[in-house]
Length: 293
Image 1 (cartoon, rainbow, N blue to C red):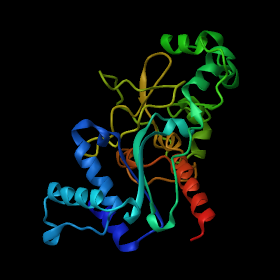
Image 2: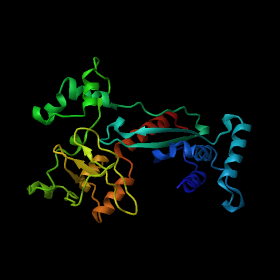
Image 3: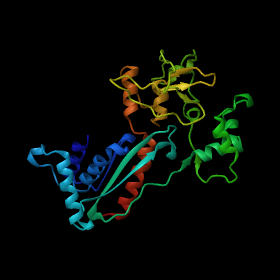
Image 4: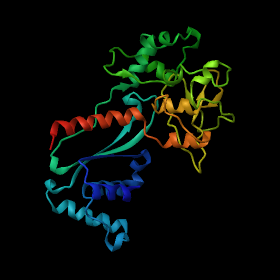
């Protein structure tokens, strides 16, 4: 991905760019390669030697020398990277991804990632302090259950958080009919078909209704990850339908997926949540419009 991303920047010279990648890129084992990516984004015109056959370590060393021997104003792009949790921006999913944002240096723009708009603390306030979350969903008292440690954290809060509450799985898919039922409403929603075969096993236990979903995964060799399941209040699990997964990725209901369940889930597992992309893109667009260079 990265060689082509850098090539695209080098050839098109955009005013700004955004790239997203998996959280694993921030592991200590990848520290050198992570910094190599950053320097390539700072200086996309400095290509690999030998028709692109230069070892990345040697290319990295040249980029480091260039970076430290020239003043900062000679950068081609000013780049910011951060680990972003989509749940903090209204996505009903705990999805952490590394996001790279760059602005062409000649624009002389200063930019930082938007402040989070949603939080776990605000969700717990509504679940444990005011209980408005349960009332809104018309959940009976006997079914108002959350993790004991989360309840203790929420009950101990004394000041209402300024952020909005995290959006939960129930918030996202609660208005959809049960895919195992026979409701006539099932025909109203595309891609909302029950997929059999879900089972819980260590490390793959499904997503509780009253929290943001766990990260949807594309899986390995075309098989969607075992976490792409709903954990029912009674402890049983079932796979999310394609429509439910699309809602967890904040795609609109009129967005139709074609192909098998596995193929559609693979696409969704690889996707960037629409709402997260919109938040970042709108922020960048606002900055560029204010600059007008």
